[in-house]
Image (tube, rainbow, N blue to C red):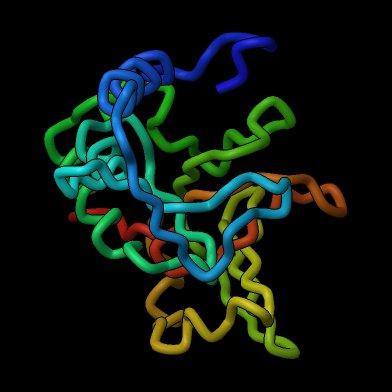
Length: 193
């Protein structure tokens, strides 16, 4: 959330208030993963309270955040995915907000760039030179770059074709096509039947 520009995303203020109550005048512990900083020089750490409470898990379980897996920092990824699923099933926080419902791939436009949850049917999957390209029937191309391919080693790409899926990540425009880089299989959700 950027308080200096625009309107905060839904539940951003509640999340900030929740965190302030938890950490104000408290000692916290940090557990670093593989990388200590991201490309923007922001500190990357798992935050624990004195009683062992994991703040990221708490935020996810209350529905104040969504889980984003960015390799190689995957230490508690499975645990965080469980917390997110708890909030989704209970429709807590962001998961009851229309703002966080998936956008249909067919309705993508230049106003819907940035971090998004996109839903649609997969048309094709292609592998070339260590890269994988997954094309939605409407307007979106997913890319798995060679440096992230190892995270998808056990992934059955053929099972995606003609399936409705929801993906999360950053939507960009490249060569007049909407694209999203997938860095980890946890960014793909199969439609529940």
